[in-house]
Length: 446
Image 1 (cartoon, rainbow, N blue to C red):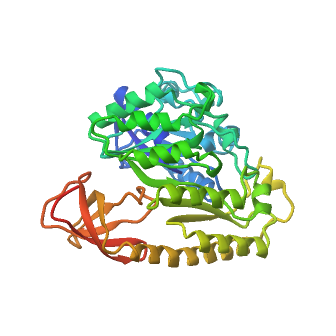
Image 2 (image 1 turned 180 degrees about the horizontal axis):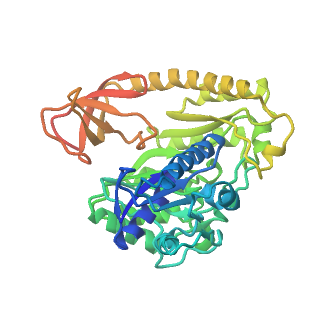
């Protein structure tokens, strides 16, 4: 029986999708990208912001039409993830073509849910979003390839006023360290060279089960695994980035000098309304400390434009902060009022046109900063991990330590040698093209 699987949303959703794929593969299911061949459609949905919710709904509607077409092969449509967790009753009522809703911590029961669907039962399996992550239960990525995400925790305790995640995924629960190390060893044995650590917040790892923030200890253990060459950190809240963590990043050669640190804004007024547990000055000091201890650190951040109550002065403060701090990588979203959040009920909601204008101004500034930073790399020799070869242009595409997959830039270079995806080689930067670098292969590989 063949499954067509659609994974929407962020990297953390991708980890959950790969877990479900692994479970189904063990139960004998095959996979296809062809809608005409699929016996089952599964959509791992996202509803973190309005655009993600719309994408999820449109995908379900489109596949639902195929599911109910008597001339098509599909026998079941399953919705998993955040949308299923949040709107299970509405999906049941408004989308009769959906056969099951599987919540955000019931992924391990995807195969049994399919068994029940094939017996004619409608399945709503939302589970307890705060249940502990038990030893022996695999909740980390099971895919192959040369890089892999490793989900180290589930849920969040921050309660930011704009965020629905705690209601969808529960309180913060760390995956036991032994499980993570064993999974990383298994992945290394399958050829994975780059581990990308993800969670709703990676920097709180271990506090719930070990009584202290244990990310530095986990990183040290992962660095000892043969075959793992790069380790990359995503979703690190600035207030939890300790000197101990920075020191480990600095001292361990396998850890990329790269950190994803969402700050969301730089106006203290807006940060307070967001429920963030930091201030502009605190963020500035943390960035300064990172750059003091690791001068070549690449800092990626995420911002929100048009949060309720944000005025022109707040927006100018954000622009000034971006101009001063010169982030290596930056993404910005317009604020999305999500029902059930405190921010959605606040006064002074901002018009969409103003949100988009402010977002575009920040991105225009960041494009200039990013291009100048890229040009400043000219002449440097960098170890890069090869993504593949662009046949039409006869060049190789690679990522530097500054570039996470799918979100950052690339480095393009010529090579007379035949290289494979996942090869790590040394490249000299010769120029830049907007967010991307241009280079040439050095005589010796890394």
